[in-house]
Image (spheres, rainbow, N blue to C red):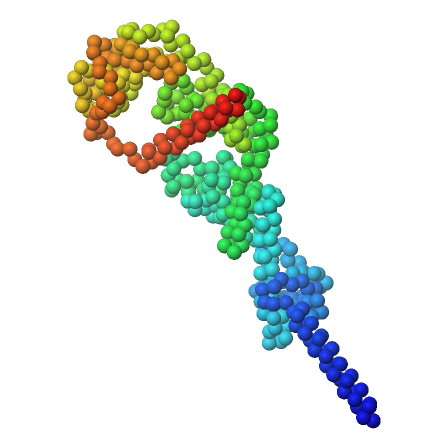
Length: 421
């Protein structure tokens, strides 16, 4: 009898041990709040969906946690396998509280991260605009597209960079659907950055295979900026003609010789990824190559005052050749102000000058007023005209942009020369 009791006690201890192990395993398998779990739909009604979570427990998704912004959860039915996020391990009814909304949001962010890696193009809708760019609806996430990431057709080219006019142009795009690439997807910072320009660049690369450096293209002036002119040509292509590549003469602004809508011929001088650089002047013989056939040092010539600067006069000898008469070469007595210089030499009038030097390679021709002995000094300065306005910050920036772009261009030319060597 005692033997039977002893066996029964052992069996009970064994059963308790196994139950404890099962209980331990059960809690070990139970996911925590915030985890993503998969379950089978066991019931669907108007206010809630219940899921079987791997036979461990029943989960419930209430109405406000249903994810309705994405098509993948729009038509759930019994038997479907779906993912949900745990928001509470056990409610008052012993059920696990779940959210399809959070799970769906996670899945969308995961997809965005994949799109960054794969570089796949997707559709996005423009929701709103601010001075920095556009708010975009990308799947179920609101992302951002900076102004710099718009393609050329949508880029707001506004003279002087007037921010209010830029915003006005951007707002006209609201409601449009565009093709974009995802550049950055940071879920922690809730930051999604997309680019329309990246899609355009890919298309450009394919089209650019049909062109090479040296090709001549027919195009139309699409826009003018202080640093150059944009030319549309081919199938949606656009290239930049830097201000130094428009004409052989020195000009202050492309609008001096071009206007939007002009039809032009240009030569491709550089292809840098999707960027195309063009030249108009290289299709015309450099007039400075033959300057010494028409002009000699010591020759007296008639020239029209083309521009009055603090350092002297820009003088037009003919349509192609312009010369510089330094302030120190215009009078035997010092000229102390731009105002005084303008009184002596009127803009648009012709005067006689003597050629003092010719440098064809540098496109330079030096002049002095006829009869003036001349004391050329680079240190000569004059006081600004009181009537002249100081350069605005905008003007300085435009000049800085032009200088920077010209510097980049020269750097590229230097690299090419080294490569050829």
